[in-house]
Image (tube, rainbow, N blue to C red):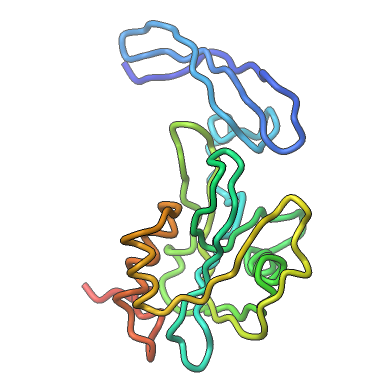
Length: 207
């Protein structure tokens, strides 16, 4: 028997994130309570719609001329009570394309200007789930170049963000010594092996 569920009940009523209880059914037909968090409204949950459109954009940006540094942020996260390294990212607002979200978020979080790289396999830009045992959020990667001057003038009061332009040596140190999100870790592993002359060559795999 395939695992399934019979009902979903909203448990909280918060502005940006809520908890739901699912009456889940295991492979033996036994019902149990399964709890998950979501940013979506009832009727729009991934388990109800089977949709995979991205909730947010994650930005893989390298400096322009030369493309030898990657844009990271060091951000305080309340659930951890500490700073961790991340890629810039943000939720897609109504009416925005993913590239528009990337430009807005990079400007807000770092002060830098974003120029999208449009080459490579489109499949690498589709939505991917994260923390799928806890929530139904999905994000898409946006690739491009960053330029301009770092600034914190557009940060929200609740945000504590330090922009970081890391070269390969610093990226490797961060991977070895610092705390960081897993999606940042995976992309830093890619960056330390990239060619500054062709920073997005990994989007065109040769098999």
